[in-house]
Image 1 (spheres, rainbow over the protein chains, first blue to last red):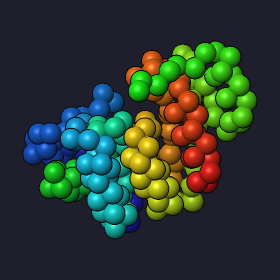
Image 2 (cartoon, each protein chain N blue to C red):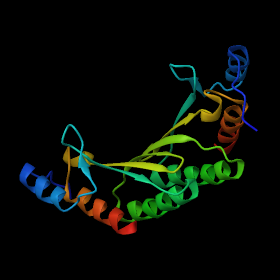
Image 3 (spheres, chains in turn brown, cyan):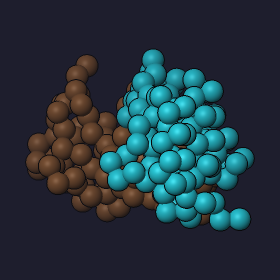
Length: 96
Length: 96
């Protein structure tokens, strides 16, 4: 089933419950920047998230530089944010 | 020991032997873009590289979107490219 893009109202309501995430400038994605103690901690987190992403078949766009991980969530099939991104953001927050 | 930044001549000689890598616009890093069959293949590669990076204490800057991995190598302590980046590029090529 193709995921549905959130309306602006739905998006704002979801973001209100995800205080660690910010809306990307174009409004089509949410982002969170994380800092860990070192590379091993950062990659350990990435490995956990990778397994979760594969399980739910929804994958982050992410960038890693040593202890830092920058995550972008969007749903290409929906052309913007969907409930899958909200669920993924919650799952990430719960991993930390 | 602080790694030494390569001279332009050393850099060009190293790049001549790394045909899959291109010099970043500012000349301070090399980049390679990879595409795998899917996310699991891409992340499997990332896990192998992460372990290698930790072992040699030299870490890539990288970005992953589903099956694609973009890698940037530079040596911050050297203010540009060092032999550590050349060795890392060779190690990455050997993993593929």
